[in-house]
Length: 341
Figure 1 (tube, helix red, strand yellow):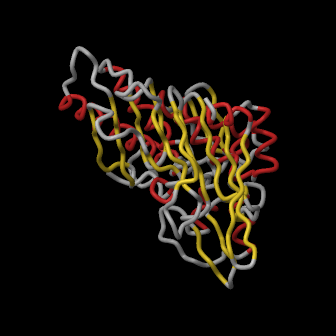
Figure 2 (cartoon, helix red, strand yellow):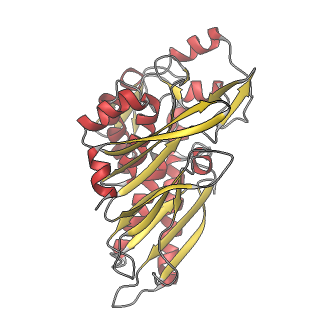
């Protein structure tokens, strides 16, 4: 299956501690969207045809890939990106849902959550092309900025999309993986499974409890590319969860670190000290989008918006003193309530 985004495997700011050994009856995993997926579930009392479930999961993942993968040349998003300006494009129901959700997050975040950053993502070498490891010219950044801006570059009317610029291109990596997670959750429910944890590349949705009757245990990783340690573990039930971080997809030049997290207003990597943001909300698609949006904004502005939106969010800031890196956490009240529940 073609990759949805490099973010699928380099944004592993979540690690799954789904359950203790023996705390689930069903464990399915595999490759998808350039990363891996894991399904952990408690078998219903009436039993479960795991072979049929696996087939349904494979079908659901293939459908999401065919709609939302930038690495699939025939996908719906690839067709949109190749669309000429002013030509209406009929959207699938799934793409329409995703784009209208993205528009709401865009409007709530000073325009910093922006799916139309495709030309800039490619320019900086964080897209489909291989990373260049070079800083683009100012003139090229300014030119690319003319084709981005979600509220102006794409027009949504019901289930129809029109582009204002032919070169406007969208990457769905900041929301599409979460959509895929939710789709697998729906698939499980269609088989009568009500207690499960689904994870794709770090984006998670949970339902009910594990076989021990406990919330699903999810670990949040310390945002340090040189080590794989866990900062804290949460008991999560009936929520989507996602973490966005800046510490696995970047390049360095002349001692300066350039992250793939781009500021929509400048077209350049963000420079604040926030290293990762974890969000828990009603589904994985929203958690995915909000985690990215709050990371772009940084802790100070991001915390203001997270509080306004009543989001459960955890910000982790990085500080380097005397050659040593330290991390400090900042949580909204909603996140603290989950942590201590």
